Length: 173
Image 1 (cartoon, rainbow, N blue to C red):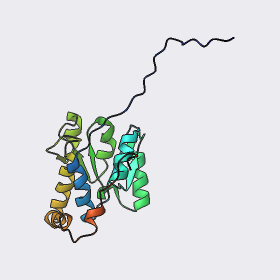
Image 2: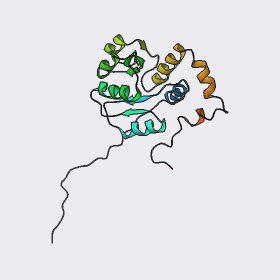
Image 3: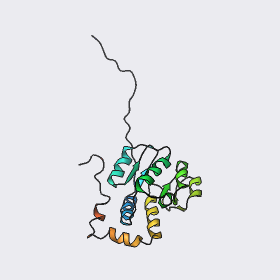
Image 4: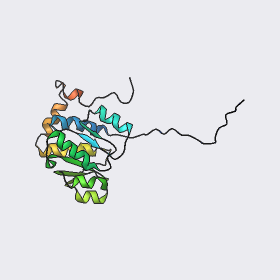
């Protein structure tokens, strides 16, 4: 009779935990009210990021992008926009090729110094702690529509703002 013996190895199932700023999520609503489209381009592949992107109903989600300009070129082609119409937020040297080509290069407060040096604007908050909201408000203020977007986002009679960034998260029912 055959006997199954364990091989002595230990298998661990890893679960990724990643925090997101609610301020950034609210910023996505403001961006949309201001006529902007929002997306993520990341070198990593993460189910957690995919869930957050789905919940925020982001227009562009590119994961596993070692060379981020490829994703940007795809966006330019699909949306019919020029590079100088794109704002990009980065934090590390992998973001520099895109930041050097777009119209508005933004670095988060905790970005590498090389990235901050090439940015047009550096956020007041760190990545994951409200930097996305900082970037969005900076753009909307420059366009002269920030206050209008804030008012629209808190207007309970506005059916658009109440449904923009509400998702169910994960597989929760």
